[in-house]
Image 1 (tube, rainbow, N blue to C red):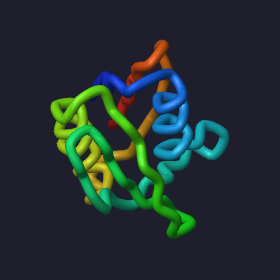
Image 2: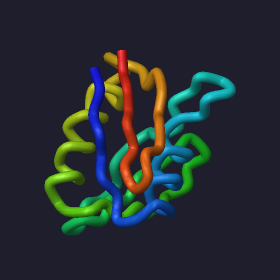
Image 3: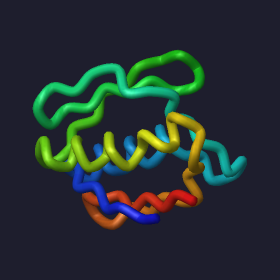
Image 4: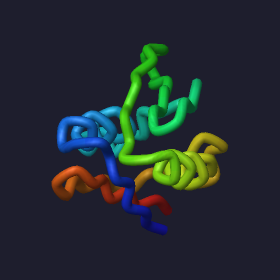
Length: 93
């Protein structure tokens, strides 16, 4: 399965991609969604830190939250992420 998430800008896209998946170890970093405020997503990662990511709009936040839920439940794993300007393509399997 694949989804494309639109971020506020290219920096936010790079941040989202690097915080949710590490390519070298094929490892999923995200451990939870802590808060959602309009187009802002606050996630927790494996080192117990929290990070804010600005997405383009609240619809993208909902799309990301729905897509990532099965990953948080350990039903799926992130297979890859790809940054395309201010968008992040995420593939899970």
